[in-house]
Every structure is written in structure tokens, then in C-alpha cells.
Image (cartoon, rainbow, N blue to C red; front, side):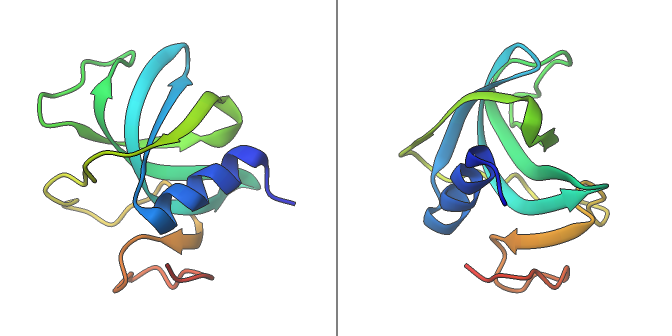
Length: 113
């Protein structure tokens, strides 16, 4: 059974909405792109465009892999969709892809947006 956080991230992907949350004690603003599992943990590949983290966030934002069990106070919000300029290598964050915002996903997601 998916967690409430997992369901919230799935809703964000389907509606292309931003998520504001706290992760590892830092406030983050992000757009989730890929959702699924890695080693039986719920994970999401997200583009973080604002907020803070333990590493400096580049001005243009950065791709982040989030373990959803560590996400706190998550909420959907309206705003521009962010995705960066792409990834130079295949993602390794999500092993079993359940949902991918990319309609041409090479990861064979279980569900389509």
C-alpha cells in the first residue's frame, strides 16, 4: 500500500504541480518527475528549483533523489513546472519506475500520466 507521501507525489506528477516540503531538515521546492521504488523504499527523482539542502543549490536548480520516508510537511502547490536542461546519464534513483512525467519514458513505467 503506497504511503500518503507517495500518493501526493503521484498527484503532483499527474497534474504537473510543485511540491513544497522539508527533507533532511531543509525546506525544498521541487517538481517530481519519476516515482517508484529502490530496494523496497519509495523514491522520487525530482528537480529542486528552490529552497535549501546540505549541498549548495545551483542557481538553475538541480536533480535530486528523495527517499519519501524522509519527506515531511509535503504539500502541492501551483506554479511553473521545472525540469532543468535534462540529464546527461540515465537516472539511477528509481529502480522500479511506477510513474514518469515523460510520455516517452525509456524506463517502462507501470502507469502513464
